[in-house]
Length: 443
Image (cartoon, rainbow, N blue to C red; front, side):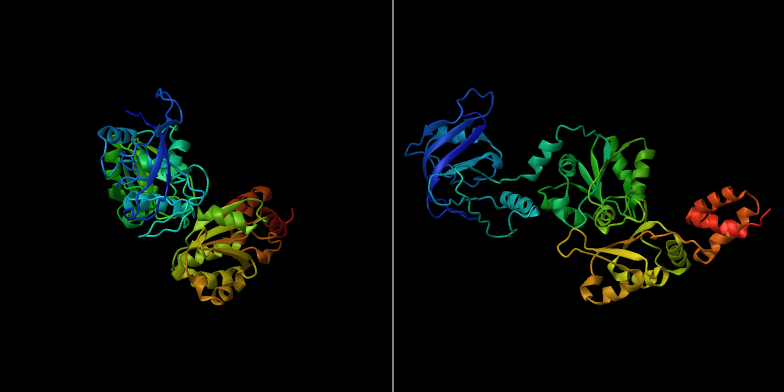
């Protein structure tokens, strides 16, 4: 019996279709490549007898093992069953000088391979006909890239403790942005908790994965945490994903983590795509010298929203905001009103096909959105750039900040009052110092 190794066949006249072959395959010989330690000579050639069954004429060709549809010799069937190779270890050598087309007869397995390849832009994703013309290379491995195998090779040696919750970042729009470590953890996880089960089921399917799903969103996060904790106490690995990006950052996940840690269980972070850092990387923000703050979604309405906008206007720091498409026009109007000529960079549909990044004075942001109806669609990340220079006069400092400064000056030395006023308000210390000198009576 042939031990597990690598089998390749010289053949001609193979037709690639997701249906039974219309013409038989002519096989000249079998070439067996032994796995290490099997005791076989590498690349041993076994002549094909005329009465041998065609090894690629079975329903499992291209998937896990080569099983013949017509059994001419019992010992050949046993050899083929013993091989049991993964689909990406079966090499096909085309004897014809032209291009060879390889037949696949397992739509389910092939569909998984094609989805994985389409994620990386290697193949179009077609539902019915899976046709791929191979190059003239003497040996071609199918598929050339197996995401889960690559993930196991990259991260399989790392320790992934049982009984732990894995907080896993997922792509924010482009499925090719998934990390190999994230794929490996999803592969070995016993269950996946998620913000939306339908969305996550489709995401997992794109990578060839199927896992039990636990709904854990903002409306049931505390209750779902108990179900997750029970699984963790049983020694299971549970991954948690939001719809996009990193859980807990303007997304559900923080309460789940708090409950799990309170139960004395471990939470493991897996970094990945983030709209915040993605936007910052292309915004060209230099005035803030690398310092920035993350505000996320502003309060939707009322006095709380107005206070947040006033604080944004008086702060000299670069600030990252997030906004939904149905509120982006209202936010643009508010920023134009409060920020005037201060620069704002808009990131729309980041990492997706229609990604758009544009920097404009806040006063011109509403007009830029209105110039193209498509610009109000998609998810938005915005960077309010840092002030080019801090305010240097009394009237450039917000009135509330000056009232705080006056109260502190009445009780504390000038330098201490300025320091505390800067910490409380976020206003530049130099501007506050100049204001304090002008306001404090000379002794």
